[in-house]
Length: 460
Image (tube, rainbow, N blue to C red; front, top):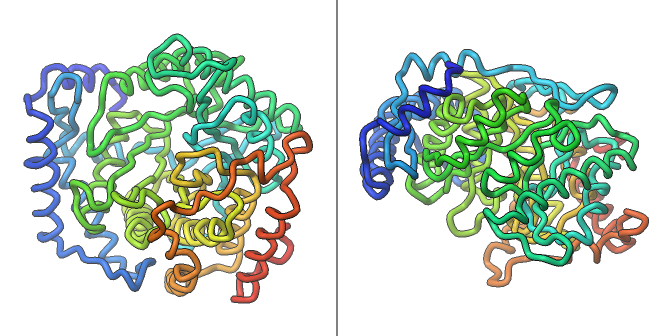
């Protein structure tokens, strides 16, 4: 179904519900019932599951959830009802191959399978992280110059010409256009002008998104975000992003940050809500591909056991039942200048790669600070490629992740977290090169994993 008028109509005329009733009676209660019905359980000592029946059960429960309750429009307090037939059509028509970028820099993303030996595509950037203008261009270049990075994403500009950017203000237009100008300049300077982008991250309302739908900024060969709110909700600003893309033609990347420990409850319920959100996004976001981004209710990071399990089982569920392009967001708790960042990134990359996903990252420090660089993105791509090249099984990946967890789990118990240092303290901004100290940490992590048996030879 590609008639978006119907979705807009349902957001105005569907059954009324208060948001509280939606959260508790629709999402929480129905999810709990479906988890019990399908007997979905998780084991915190086995993060990467090797149980196809479990993956299928999570998929069936997610489909039943969205078929029973639909999606919710916050502005109108109306339920967008979605029939089983429509949902099935949405799954059947999801692209299995998409191309982003142009010319020699174009890359094709494919729907990867479980234990796929084709390497994952790697997006480099600090998606959504607040980034001061004085370091934005150099930060983008630090990713674009990495040979293993296939496509570029970025943080949000928090200031323009010394002025703070506020959501919905005219400066949001200026910030989003400035963001795209910097990204295009970064690609030009790095000799990769046609590289595809997931951009317009500085657009919180629809203003910035509308302002950059132009070939000088966000090209039709690029992508923008169309978020789905927690849980299974839309609003008119994000529906405006969909409408903006229909005639212009840029690709829609759906984003549903399901809370693990939130309305869906523990990881089994969160996985069901995550599956339901991606299925709904095929219609409500007109998704061309999906960003998979469950987050921990307390720790936020994607590197906790609970979130890694959800990432694993949801990716497997789609790979088995409805193959489509899924890109896994990597948001570590740690920041640049810390050794733990490399271990968190490796665990995320291993889980996503073996379960059938592509890679995007890293949104370090939970995506809340400009403590990120191209070096850990290089590492993310290296680990993903090594896992695919070595033909890891699900059980191998599980064994590896369980060995990595003790190397970084302690950071979740620190009150201050593990923020590390901002980009301009781990990189020489003028040369766009990592400092010797930051490069030494990368080499130390590489040596540690090589000593544990990960073959990184030939992947500089």
